[in-house]
Length: 379
Image (cartoon, rainbow, N blue to C red; front, side):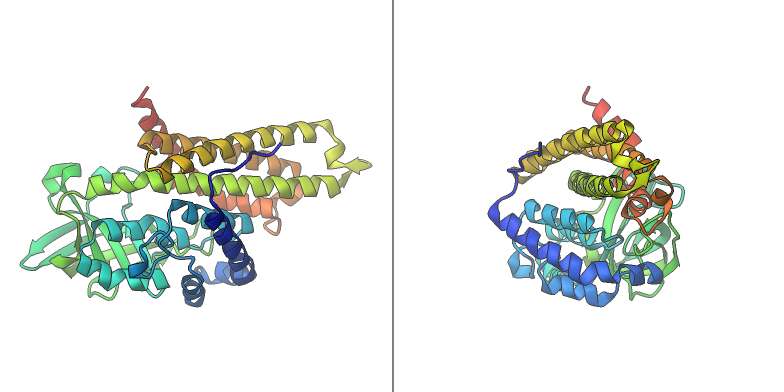
């Protein structure tokens, strides 16, 4: 039994085919080189822009695709089904660019969005700080007003797209005494004096993701780079997190589905003790459990995508989707690694790569413990 997917329209599925071909042709063959280099090459970013796979939800007047969240979701599903790891396309397009569209004035949007949509300008968002983790209220990076400028001082860590980015949206304190009510979002061009990148962080998985430390040593930025209103940054961040969490649920579901397909192929081919691994009852039972859990993940995720397309997705529902899909995915991946035996620990096998790459999903976008706290508030 397959879950019948009726959440997507014909135009969504047409884009899915374009995305699938792009990831298979332009990304999968280059994955080893990206892993070695620790980042995705700039030409691939530009190719993604030319193919219309960046910023598909941005209005056409700024160079975007003029689509909706369904278009963004099918792209991220195909990226993770293809096994493309560490490419920050969705972060750039579906998590950060919406801040510029929603909060930017017309001058800011005209200045930045066309290059963002084409892949000429890569985006990062700098929230997390050393020792801060998911606690955004404890941000210590400051932005002090000095005439027509802000002077930004502080450091950030775990910043995806940190090495490639030309524009970083920085969460900083403009009123340090006000706690969460003193946070602002300021766009910082990485060419400005006092900005520097730290080391490329070595992670358990996703070696091609250019995750870095960023430092702001008295960076002078014009006040016209402020996004939205001063001291409203924390509420702005909270408003965008539901979509980020739904995107995580979407790609975790797609990845788990694909790993189930790989595992079924493997166990039906692999011989052990005079029969295939598939012939053992334990294998069938384990994979039956995975199948049931994948169907539940898909049903929940598609419901939330449908609600988000209708602008009805709640913060609680997004937290439920992220919590359930990430935790369930991890259990399923662990079971499927076990069914591969020693080969499940070899990175040449997709299941081992998924095991290392996808562990971050239980932390990114708010750790599972944060999701439980959000859900518990409504109990």
